[in-house]
Length: 228
Ligand code: CA
Image (cartoon, rainbow, N blue to C red; front, side, top):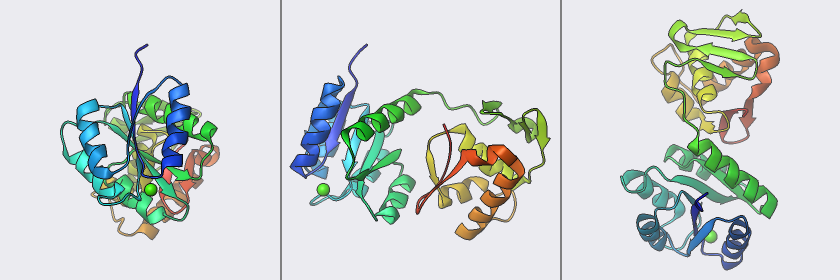
């Protein structure tokens, strides 16, 4: 199997070293950059499969780098994982909305880092079902064409908005969606206007899904995701 390459953009040497050492040991090819500007340059030259991007960088910060990566056709497909410090949930939300795929909160253990990176690469390589295709996940069968959800073979009666929210999350299990992203996706079905309204929809959705409601996980301070 060809080695997958990872670019680490982090100015703190000890963290860069920790990431470099542990992921290198797993067989990934690692490149490091200490500034956002260098990170962008290396992303274009090296074309890594995944970029670990610290948000707090001197000069161009991680959020700006993320935006630049997503706006460049040469780099916009790359997986971007933000490194953030505890308590930076608002930055995580902004980063996800700018197109980052996931985040890891510092401090982290090497084990957690490796597991998360593997999961992100696995998710990234998985094909996302098209808008119309039927999704079978856990005990649920979701058929978009018919707006139908079956739980253990029994039909679940959902509103258009609830269906839209479930479909968005279940199409990409494991990915975190912010309330804004959920709002955007569900807009146009029926009234759903505020963050609070998203939470209310989720509560209703979980209730109707019964024992499958637990698969919709709350990510504190960030949003929601469907369990892998
Ligand atoms: Ca830093």
